[in-house]
Length: 553
Image (cartoon, rainbow, N blue to C red; front, top):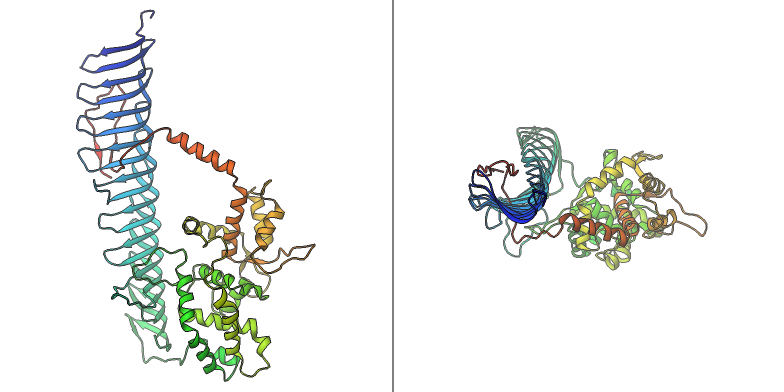
């Protein structure tokens, strides 16, 4: 038309390249196939001689790419498979490089792979790596190595580490667990576990080691050895506190008889020690079952079926047993149980772990504070308080999950993936308590202000609806005319309030809009397989595509 190519046709170029497809105004424009002299072929959309939108590249070695194209380069969502290496990749691209979310497979069996963030062909951001051995890492990456916070599981060595990494090495604060090999039908109450500082992959600095036997060391470490000031609690409850050199105690151990809480309990009620012990022993089976149930909430399956309860799980237990309906809030319980030596920022920490013996000790303390007025005129009454709490609160209601966080497994897994970020936000909006010990805490009023600052109050999520969410799981905090917004929120209550608010704030129309947006980004692209290593080439028609270089990931 007017001397220009128009419609369907075939063009042969000097050097042996060929195009077959649609023309418009003399340009390759529309659907077509371009084949280079060396055998590389592109099938897809052209816009004025340039590969655009969607297409498929096939290299003469059998490698191929199918997906989004922009200016001749892989750009957008697409799939690549190498024929010379057992590698494939599915995900997002930017100007010919892996960039954004994507998954790469390093073998044909799909047993070795990485799924996560990419930046210019490099693992950067958050991602999960599964190795051929079965070992896995999930967390942050920088320049293709583990860097930041992440979890590594060595299934071959029965170990796990959760914490900070610096260029592939454990460095900073973290938790290392050694799982025990068990005989069939056997179960230990604990596993070996270290919580503390690491330097270049070794325990170094301040740290706490919990032994499977029940013994605990809390103190200083140097190059994987106990060295410096420390405290060692033996499995029988005896305590040594003093100097350690090269993993050994200095001098003769000055044991302190009994558990640490014995003096306090005796002061509360002299002569009731054995009665309390017998009361605990009568209910020990039920209490172990309760501890096992709550300590496993939100946790992945463990090889040794052993879990250590966190304060977050302990709060859920207290609320399920409705102990916060006894005129003592969860925040007040934290202060009662914290002791004088607990750092202020750790009084309400959801990450604190509780051994089973600590769990029992906490129950005894709370039983006294909740029920002592009912039994104080009946002689030695600590055991009576404990039995009252177990029979009235624990046995009837424990293990019946209330609240939104732990009530459904998929929701729990999703919510817990944001738990660290939520903890950062919670701490940022906490204010110092006006009463001793003046630790950081959050009130309902501050939670309301926070959502208002984030502009999350809406037609659906009004201030009055928010107050209803905050008070629904607690004791009666309001009368017919007012609500007490000075009530404190522990972190569990904060997270569950956020989840309840999300269910109100996010409407079905908002969800549909997001789904439509995601579907549009993916367009109609479909693949049958999945992916890993990839190429870094220019795909413009004026360049030869014969020199394809596979980039080792």
